[in-house]
Length: 450
Ligand code: GLN
Image 1: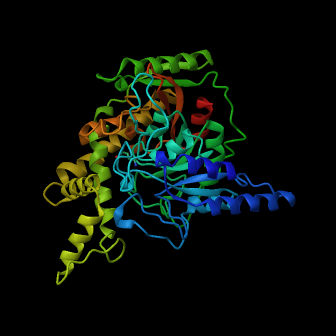
Image 2 (image 1 turned 90 degrees about the vertical axis):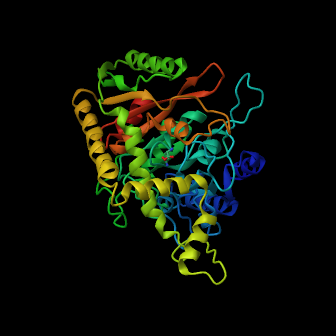
């Protein structure tokens, strides 16, 4: 723990952590020593982890990187963080992220940008984004400030930052990890998952993080498989689907090249490559950007200065004035944009045209995958349409949303998906490949990435 604690201190310029909790990490290390002397070996004994700021942590600020929750110290741990601590892990601190997990570059955080530890070969010293929204998790694991971190993925927030920083991230099947105590963004999409250096570390963490929780009504009532013990790189005979709709215009040749490389690796390992079609892919991004803001606008209604959120009350103002002042002061621009889009698509006059329509398209997207999985075992795609970009380089919200083009279909279908590092581009920046599996086939996904 000591060496990680000092690494975190030395790397403060990355701004990966919003709060440091060295005492928590040390206490876990000491407990691990006591446990070991009694012959008690827990799966994560003494391992110091970073916890994304979206997870409630008892007595430790949980702000979702938002001003509106700054200073909020929950009375309890989220189910996932409690499970990690019960398995022996310690917490090095809370990790920076996009505000309420809305973003793809960690630039919407109220606590400032996170820097990627990576640099372009010839780009001078331009600061790069670690991706988002789990940017602090990606930066911290990539810079070796912690051996693993929690992330959450609503529409790519584990996978895209993992790809941008050369680490591994797993979004499990929707319902594997309890959402209890995780600040809600879009409840029908939100899933927690591990971000770590490699597949094995992710498997170890995911095994601890998963499991039925009666406190989350969407939690799956299933035993947790022994993913780590059953890891096997033998993928002979597996049928790997290559969706033709993911070959989209405007994607740099290097992304195609890394995809080709991945196909070759799979072939060399004895897998069979099958061209497949997911015909509704092009509707996934607009569908996601209706459903996610709609759910967000509803989830974020609780930050009203009464139930939750730092209250700003104008003198002699009405209750409405207080709500307005609280939310105007507390939410950043991207969060406000999502609330406006969300309330618009849910409003009486537009519900059928937007939200209802998006729900139907979501079903079609899920059905595309069901059909494809009659032919193949797994699907291989790039994780993101580019390598990490420079901080401040993407200012147009729509351009930012394009980052999620390969990630959101699996989110809308609730499928397990992982990003694994697949090499470097000509600038020396990491690129990731995404492996998507059938519902509950985290094992297949992780085996293929091993
Ligand atoms: N970038 C996507 C968004 O901004 C995904 C975020 C996430 O998965 N939390 O909504």
